[in-house]
Length: 271
Image (cartoon, rainbow, N blue to C red; front, side, top):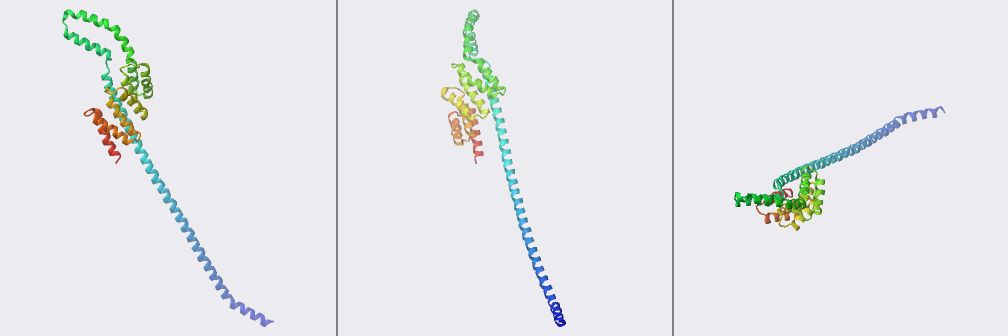
């Protein structure tokens, strides 16, 4: 019995280093595997993180680009709006100078001037009497012509109340269907709509002048502004066609010169 116990002790002592070595080897292998797994996990996390960073940077760049585009478009719209106001103001100033006197008053003044140059002092009394007798007839004509309503609408337009001006000018043809101011009323209705960026309504008002009053001095400007309006609506080919027609049909006019300027700008913007 004692011999068996001794043998067991000896065997155990012999196996102990071997088992210890096996355990140590297993622990080392396990530790290496854990380290490798940790490196893999950490590497994947870093790649994922870097990917998210790159994605966010791309999104920021995209937003910056969109912001720059919007800022450019806003500046462009502001510039166009200033040009519209300046153009309208210049045209209104010219209208003020041209319409200081009504047609009836201008006719009377011209008539009086021509008569004064053709008569002597002995006829002055009879001429004055003739002018006096004409006055009762001219007053109703001025009222029927709608001069006061037309000038009132222009004053609203000059004050910058464009919506109200459009309403007043749109009502004018119904109120004064025989007025000599009708071509101008339609023209300024188109100009007011143009400033408001109601381009389709502007085109319609300008077309009324072109169709109904082809002899009006406003026709070249109406065609010019139709070209501008078509371009603002994105109809580039239609705009070019109209502006070229203005240059061909009304050479050496301010409308033709402005048409050329706008055509040159369109070429630059559409390159």
